[in-house]
Image (cartoon, one colour):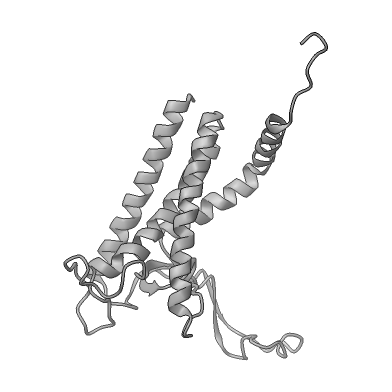
Length: 235
């Protein structure tokens, strides 16, 4: 694929994922109460949650005086990461990298931007999401939302409790701090995430599985290009 088509494809992927991600988030936020669950199947729920931190509901410095500092720092990091990825994709398109590589890099970028939008603007344009019986969140005039600029909460909704069980007694493991106690209900993969998180995770896994050699070869090529070439005796 030529460079122009690669650039168009990258832009289309980024815009497509961002639009899908934001549409899902807005629909969930304006139609569901915080912590509301909608059962789709036994192993798939729409479960509306919000977090101030990282992907899959993880949070930096949760419930500490440094929570806001961690939130601001993470938002800035995401913005810097997005700028770097844009630059890197542009460089790879100029070098005519493979289509699959550009597609996966674009998915990482789109997922990052999708969550950056939540962090930067949701606190400015939405009222707060609260548990039932409060009404779902609504759009408000810019600047009159539930939190300051860059302090918005990321909306998560996909929940896949693939395997559930009650913990049996296991003598060898029962002494480990934090290990589930006997009879405790356990869930395999209890993270709640959004479309942007999924885009980042899937693309990163595929990059590691299929393009690790490609990344190494690009690095070697850059090293070779930066190494001065010997001149011939006739020069």
